[in-house]
Image 1 (tube, one colour):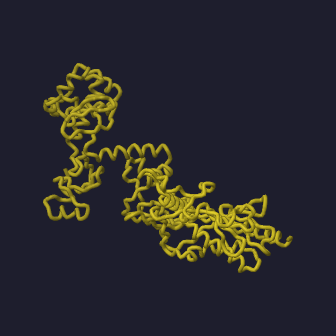
Image 2 (tube, rainbow, N blue to C red):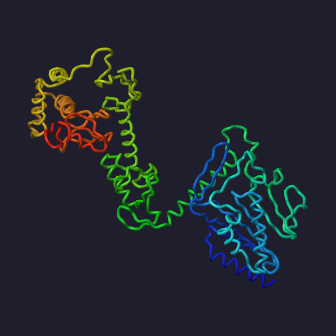
Image 3 (cartoon, rainbow, N blue to C red):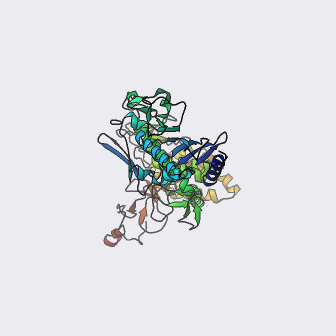
Length: 500
């Protein structure tokens, strides 16, 4: 007896040294414990569920673990095997019974030696081969499944005084020994005492929107696979494609859209520069010719809350700018986005309730035509709005000279101009007019998205900063994404001469 106890203690100490706390838990009150075993899967292993004409199949790398709960009887290992419970969510009662029988056979083959490590090796390396599962785990369909296939726990005990008599609907005799198999359901009947360990019965599903037991099991398998993949990624070393330094996966970001792996330091700095510059469309994979983007959650984790708030706001504005049926409220204190109606030139801001004309962005004027933007008409408006005694110049050139004189003059000169023309005319009306007039003169509309484009140098092949598409600056011809230079070789426009 003392030899058995000593071997039990040695085996538990060996298991403790081999497995971590997630795989092995010892119960100190007695010689018992739990072992969590993950079955090794072959490459390109998948799980599938067939529902009527629909087949759902997913490639996975991990299955939920098998839970082996054991207790050592006093005469283990010399005379008796461990009493154990084997639990698994993705195996049927029949499969669990076969595994339990094989575990007992493994103990018998040892001739009275410790067996737990051999059991773990079998469950990890050979369980799929033993159950004749090769490359696909086919989950039972709810239309054809029985209570036998929904059972998830198998309890094996030797000389259990609390076991029911043989022939009970909740137990079945097994082998010629005293070992008994306790199942929560068999022969099409459900054991209400053990119902918590089983999946819900299909008859309780009353609507088409309810999730079936097989769908729940599939979801659990996929969630577990994703969690284990992330854990494996965190402890694997990867070479960053930017700095070419090896990093643990926990210090890297995996861009699922393209599969590239970048260290957090490089990608964070790349994103910070793009967001600070306002180029939120440039927050993408730094690999050459790759247009994949990190997820918003990844961006937030990389740049922090403050920069992410700016990124989120600019991304929304960029998205709205690309929508042809959205404009902005022209009120300077508002600027909220406004949805346009195709059949009307009128729009109303839902924030400040300002009604304006979509064409001229001024107060809505009904069926009357928009006011012209000629210099004389604008000059008349300026004369009416200015507060000083002198009239502002009527030409754009004269206004620009006056503005340059004011912005580059001394304090005394500025004070003189303010007293002559009025503070409102010099600091509000005149800059606004020159700004609007400058846009009209120095910009063109992109022929793709009709956004205002300024050209401040370079060749005549332009790339719109809004829609990222190409066009010719001279004739506004839309250019293809590839071979855009052919327009300047075959047409009348020159690539490097005749800048407007």
